[in-house]
Image 1 (tube, rainbow, N blue to C red):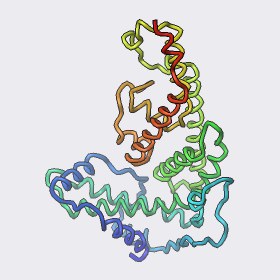
Image 2 (cartoon, rainbow, N blue to C red; image 1 turned 45 degrees about the vertical axis):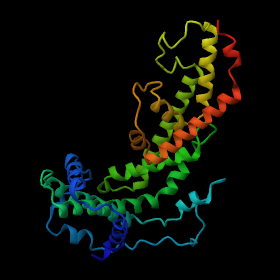
Image 3 (spheres, one colour; image 1 turned 45 degrees about the horizontal axis):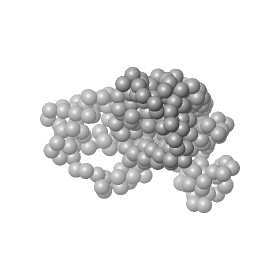
Image 4 (spheres, rainbow, N blue to C red; image 1 turned 30 degrees about the vertical axis):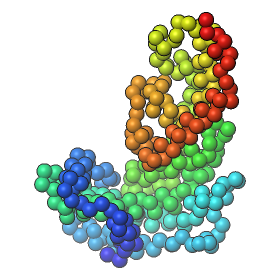
Length: 323
């Protein structure tokens, strides 16, 4: 189908460095695909024999991103160039939006149909490759929707930015929220995606601001108010009560100087606060919507900050309190 040529070209480029589906990799892939149903917004017409031809018959006619763009990209004060370029994707019409959503969900519907016929014990390589290709093509259509609506995320999150809520953190969370909204949007209800996405992104940004505020309140109250489990064995008997509270306040102040993601990672990696067990880099990466290497970088950055703050502050007065 000519309408799928750009998406298929992207799929072929992604396969240049892909790991071949053989042996254990094939079996693990089959088990992972078979264990989880593929989500999509259903439509009664998806099951028709000619559904594919009908859905991909109309031309999509997406405008390519011009470099430089024909009109200035959305500008936000002090915004780096690499971020402002995210707003250069052309807007899409209501008809284009409907086609993108219909095709995205149809491709996922087809992938789920093949997934239901997959035998993990005797996986067919061709079927797994087809499922992966269908999911890639579906995500390609989803990404076109996301690109066309990134201006919306910028305009929303900048209203929530302040000294305690950094723009790049809110933007990252807002883009994840936009992608989640695209996955759950029902294009049959007759209203534009931006109406639905605005509510999702705004609610997510507000929740982030409230979470940051609550965390700062816990930090200002000391580690005990953050529900850190400190046993009597950790509290050395040869340290006076006043010096122990001084040490707690110093640590709380240091954590308070980290940004929201750094605090989350430090608490999770060292089982602080509500985290009763150490979390892995991969679990945090999935939670934050970033790569495992990015979590590792954020952890190292946070530890470097804490080390520098400890050196700058010094603990001579705490040591003098030892009796």
